[in-house]
Every structure is written in structure tokens, then in C-alpha cells.
Length: 391
Picture 1: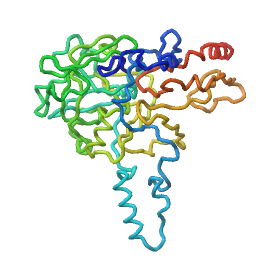
Picture 2: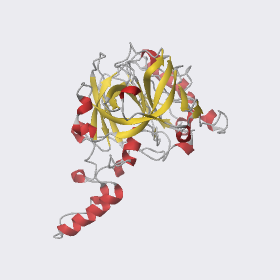
Picture 3: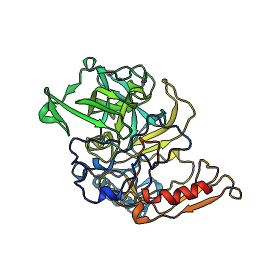
């Protein structure tokens, strides 16, 4: 998640909120007990938050706004067979046009295992060139190295640098078209820096862009091709830190920002709903050839992936990052992979005293798929440490 957005006001201009939320203090963070932190430590700092840049686009929907029975939105629950099927169908079609359609029209794409993160495969250009990008709900922009990028770790990544000269649809943005970038040498140049010290610089470009499978034939899949759109991304010219050594070529911001792929696909009519889902699985190995570790669903909800009823947490922020309200925190001995204890008689579960106002103060608690760490408010440090030690 990015730190230095060009349009973000300097730290300190947002009043007391900066003091209220210091959950990215590296001295107080607790590391993930299962995954060594490598590339995923990309937690977006609070000063990057800019209300003027952000748009509505909840990815975490409240339960009452989810699908009704029979896989239709709740607005349609009251429409049942009453002898006038034509009228009911007319009402449904009219309401569908207003709300953007049903939830059962979507694109699915595989997710691969990275070094502590998950990445998607995207196909860019004409003909399509394969790129791998971390899926990061804590940042806005998509970027990856282009041919000529200086010391950008091509030997570490899954694919060669993107070559603009091999795409007939590639177009560099002109200065009048810059999106949160500065004009430099007739190019729209922007830079992003991340909490753990890595950064990149890029110029903005547009090309055909869609998600798909990792296989070399994935770029020609007709179903995935039908979701292709002209999309703005950063053509990286330099990288530092973990961006050089990570497995994925680049990063794809998935926040509630107008520059993200799901929002642009929705704006261009490729998706019926402005939403997406990420289903993660953890594998024990990684490979440049790709290790399947989940599924991304764009524009809908794929209930085929559910092995049990889904539990939803409401997105409490109308704009900005996907924000949840934390009510309680528990620590359980011997860990586990589920909320349900492996051995309810043997495993000790202790509740950490939580000041709800402090825990959810400032800009709240965000869900960030681009980091391996969980960051808690500094006021919880003492009580968390005591419970952690005891358990």
C-alpha cells in the first residue's frame, strides 16, 4: 500500500487523526506467525488517504445487501409467482436495468502463490503479453516493469519486461491526460513508495488489459478476451527494495479508487456490478511456473467456491479503503486454520480487552490484501502482549 501519492497533502494537515491512528508503527507491529514477511509488507500509510481521489465501490458488502434467495439481489425477493409472470418479469428487468443486473454474471481468474502474497495473471497489449501482479486492496494503481526498466529484477520475476513496441494498441498518456501524475519530458510520471522501503517510478500508459489464466494460451481465451478493456497502468522505469526481488512482476491496486481495474471494467460495461471477491488458499511452495492458490471473481459472487455459509463484515466506509469495525480480539493457543478450535477442550482462548473507540479511531481498520502483517492500534500493545505471553 502506497505512502507517497502525488496528490496527497503533506502529513499533519489532517488534524488529530494522525495521532489517533498509528497502526503502521513498525516498532509495534506483530508478525504473521505462519508466513515470513518478504514482498507483502506493503501497508499503505494513513497520510496517503485522500477523500477527493476516492470513489464508492464496496468490496465487502453488508449481509443485508447480499444476494437474496435463488441467487437474485434482495430487491427482487418480493417477486414471486402470482399468476402474472409477465408483469413480474417486466419488473425484474426494469429493476435490473437500474441496479446493473444480477450477481451471476462475472469473470473468474486464478490466483497464484507469491512470497507471502497472492498474485493474478493479466494479459496486456495486442497481441497480449503475460504479466503477474500482486492483488493489493491497500493501494490504487497498477504498475509493472517495461522494457528498459533499470535494475527491475527481471531474473526474479515470472515474466520478461513488458515490451510496448510489440503492442499495436499501446499508447503513452499525454501530459493533458495525466492522472495524479506530473508532466516530465512529455510523459505522465508518478512514483510510489511503500512502508517497508521499496518504491517504483513509472510513466502512465493505456493498452488492452484483461485477467486470465497463467498458461501461455491464456491470452487467447475467448471468454477472458471478452472482458478486455483499454486500461491505464504504470510502465515502470525503475524499482527499489522488494519490488526487485519479488516473484510477481508488479502490483495491481484494488482499493475503492476510480483507477482500479474492477471499477474501470464496471464503468466500461464489462461488469454488471462494481464488486469483486478474493478467495485465498495458502500453499507451502512457490514457483515461477505458478502455484494455484485461490480465485479472484470480478463483478459477482461465485458461490461454487463456498464450502460453508459465507460470513460477511460490513464495509463501514462509503469511500476510501475497505474498512471493518473491530469489536473483539481473541488469542487462542496452538493457532489453527479456522475460527473453530481444533480441540475446544485443550485449546485456551482468551479475550483481549479492547477500547472500541481507540481500535476503530482515525481512519479505522482496513482490509489490505497486499500485506502479510496485521497492525493493531498502539493502545492495545500492553494488553495484547500480556494475553499473548499467557497463552
